[in-house]
Length: 179
Image: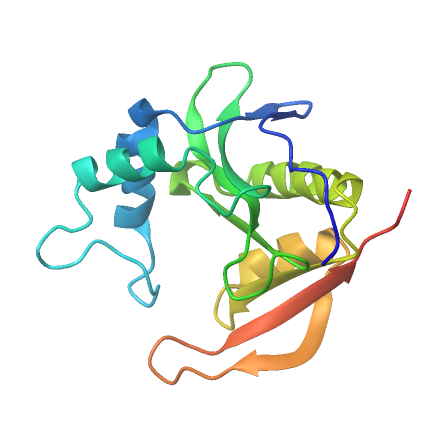
């Protein structure tokens, strides 16, 4: 098994700061779940779960919100400190050696280039960990995510996870430049 550097716990871009989760982020994190498209797999269910306390517990137990060495990092605007989403690397549907790039932004933050900016910082950091390839899965109906990934040099693989109810997941991939 290959050895990798850990994804940094903080990344800074021109406009954004990605950092470790804090228990106080639970409300904003849950807000993302409430905004999700009805076709999304993980949503707040009819009983209101996961609750705010459930999410706060997750953030305390696993402040990187991913496997050790990887991480989903909250995104905040540098100018205001406003929480606008998260971005990072996770095993997800991929693997530890070739993790999945994941991001989600609050609707109020859509259309400003924040997803591309945050994801570019994560891709650059992933390269420094020693990894050679990243994956991303995108539902076929999520055109904005396809645009973000294409700007970052991801391309469609031949892999598709069929889901007649929620929409097929298209597997995007990118080989990483090695230092």
